[in-house]
Image 1 (cartoon, rainbow, N blue to C red):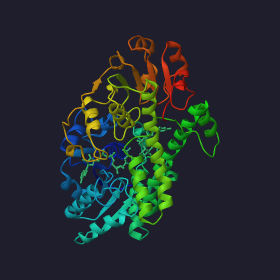
Image 2 (tube, helix red, strand yellow):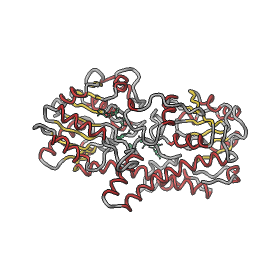
Image 3 (cartoon, rainbow, N blue to C red):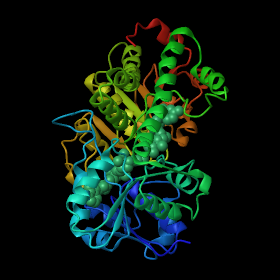
Image 4 (cartoon, rainbow, N blue to C red):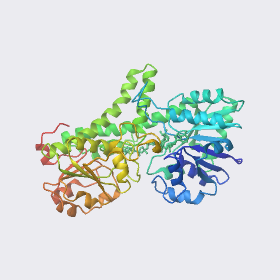
Length: 483
Ligand code: NAD
Ligand code: UDX
């Protein structure tokens, strides 16, 4: 039976917020306080307008907030009172210095660890929730122990596997919960304490316990494997376009093999999100540091194919529209990195828009969950700069003049020469494409980066259609393209 424990989580982001809300919901006897250095973010968690959009999240937060779930900026006080401290701060890619562009930047993690060491007055279990390089626990342990003043710290690795857009579902019913710890009696005891928390709603056969290094590496490996499936199917999509095969049919047939499985085989304009690229780069760097250049280059190629997929999409757009989009209006439907989230971190839409802007297009963007301010900030930020606490980012970057943002798909497409679908929002399947066609310049082009529309039906309306990995429109076959 779980004794009364207090939990504090550092980092009220996409992981810390939903994860702690679900722990609070499922463990009414546990008091959970989520803290953050961003005052604005904590204020939003305490308001009716939560800082992140996630189906089902509002409901969970409403049930527990003020009961056993709290959001606060009083970091020191709540660390001091906690038995278990989760660290769920961001671990971006380093932008400068040793390992720049690859290695994980542990600045936020380290300052969190030092803070814990400074304020702790009783023994604590410190849980790595953030995705970190293998062996981070060892570094954190050193910081804590050297500053401990006689307090005992146990470090656990408990990586999070939720995906955005389905976070609540994933947390309620995880494929597995992974807990890594030291193989000492104290380490094993700490693992059991955390296991007891999850056992409130996760069946024991889904709670895996391992050593620290296996847990840390499993998270990086899982993300690398997932991203690799997408790059594999995206590489095949290019060959489909060249040969007249249909990537959906190929993926279906391949995925029917039970050894391969049907999930995560949808060809797209490229994967995005805050994790895949960052974590693969981190894995690549760890391989290089361990004298394994072949292994590093194997995983690096997953990212190369992803970059190729985004740039060949842009090339298709430009080459089919007579090799220039200069001053042409291009509508972009969807900016988030996937449906059911307002998150735009590393979204392929950023690279596609930048590519089109490079060719002087005028872009009109509609996404049901992303604000104009966010889009302008994303298009202005430099590579990797996005992954730093929100309050450290520029609030009013110079707006890109060639870009407008609307709250309506019909407004965005009015008078456009072409439409690019970059996120698979369900509503894009149900738009009135006859109406859209009538209000566009002719010839009217549609480039479907998520395979949400039926190319045949749209061709019947009059559109010239490009869909990822599908047999090419006769129009595109005649256009010389560098893809
Ligand atoms: P996020 O940027 O949304 O949230 C991190 C929060 O930590 C920010 O609000 C920031 O202000 C805060 N923070 C930074 N330093 C702090 C400190 N010293 N004390 C208190 N708060 C501090 O990031 P996220 O998406 O929640 O990701 C967090 C970690 O979880 C990353 O390591 C990420 O790789 C991992 N992860 C993310 C996902 C995902 O889908 N987003 C899934 C699994 C794992
Ligand atoms: C991912 C992992 O799935 C999750 O387990 C981990 O904890 C964090 O990273 P997330 O990035 O939130 O989650 O979303 P995910 O569903 O994995 O999608 C990532 C990107 O891949 C999106 O841009 C999505 O559109 C793309 N994708 C996904 C495809 O292009 N094709 C697919 O078949 C699946």
